[in-house]
Length: 270
Picture 1 (cartoon, rainbow, N blue to C red):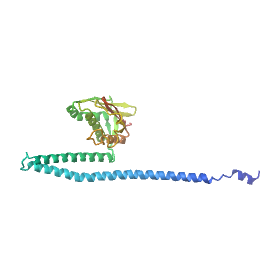
Picture 2: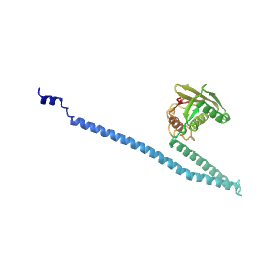
Picture 3: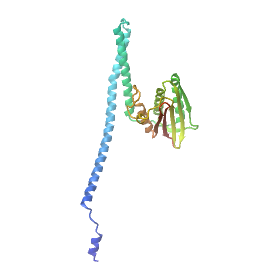
Picture 4: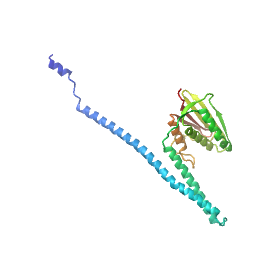
């Protein structure tokens, strides 16, 4: 075999035009997908920013309405009017209703701003047992006034985590309030801490009415609430805070027996 024949045998086979076209098409699809994902991310961030700014703009006139309603009510109550007159009584009652609704609207806006806002953590080394003890001491008077007995079973050794103590307290308080609302006739609120491998575990259990199985998958969804006056943002905000700490929150419930929330947070590495 001559040199020319060997060259022909060892020469690279040119790529088929069809294969090249498919590769180019796939590359184009990948590029478009990446571009679309980037645009969605920018769109979501921009939407969050705009809605936050809108909520702030609503809060300003709302505060003015609240202040003026308070002043009008004080003036009417202090005026030299026949307080037995039906018209006067109806006017005061209507003002009271408007004040109640503006308070509720303000709470909804505050909850919304907490939910859409960036979760910027102020991390510090915190013993979870100490934090839970502080929250139990803080909430015990309110629980006692509702015929709720608080019991604690804390892990025998310190459970030190890098957390934002104020934000974590907000989560715990929200779960305490949820438990209290689930026990309208009183009951027990049991708080446990434990260690599981590299995690600190917080478990908050009530003996309330429980959550129906069909509602359980939705309780962390924004604006989902089983209570008429609920904002629907308490548990989603709690989940957002826990996940910002690289933790998890889960729920287990049985109707008629109670509900248990379990939080897991990574322990601080030495």
